[in-house]
Image 1 (cartoon, one colour):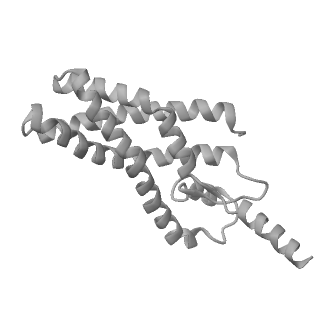
Image 2 (image 1 turned 60 degrees about the vertical axis):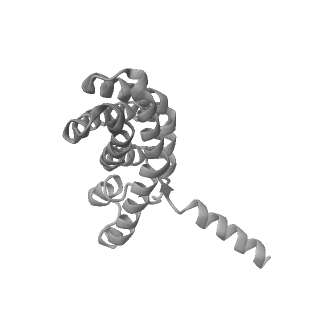
Image 3 (image 1 turned 90 degrees about the vertical axis):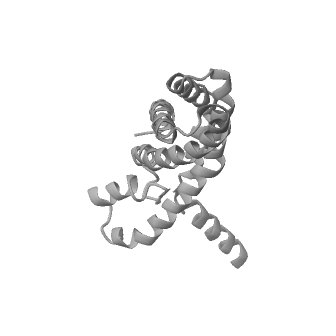
Length: 190
C-alpha cells in the first residue's frame, strides 16, 4: 500500500512540474523549417545578388544549426536565468505581476497554475521566446552563412552579410509568430 501511494504521488509531482517551452519551440521550428529555409534563401540571395541555389545550402545548414544547437542552448540559458530570478516572483500569488512574469522571464518553463495552464500564458510565453531566439538565430546563422559563402563569392563584406542575415531572420521570425498564432488559435483554450 505504501509503494502504491508513493508511485501515485510521484506521478502527481511529475504532472505538476510545469511546461518546459523547449518542446513547443522545437515543434514550431521543425514545422516551419522548410518554408523558413526557402524564405531566408530568397532574401539572402536577392540582397547579396547571389543565385538562390547557391544560398539554399548555406541557409539550410544555418537553420539546422539554429534548430539543433541555437534554440536549445538559448532555451537552457533562459531557463537558468528564470530559475535564478524566480524567487522574485514567489509569494505574489496569481495576479497581473505573476502573469507578466509567466509570459516574459518565466517563459522558458511555464510554471504550473491551479486549474492547469492557461492557454494565453503558453501563447504569450512562446511569442516572447521568439525574441531571444531571433537574436541567437541571427548570430549563429550569420557565422554559418558567412563561413559557407564568403570564401566562395563575397569576399570580406561582413556588415552587408550581417544586415542581410538580420533581415532574413526578421522575416522568418515574423513567419514563426504567424504560424504560432494560427496553431494556438486551433489548439489552445484561452
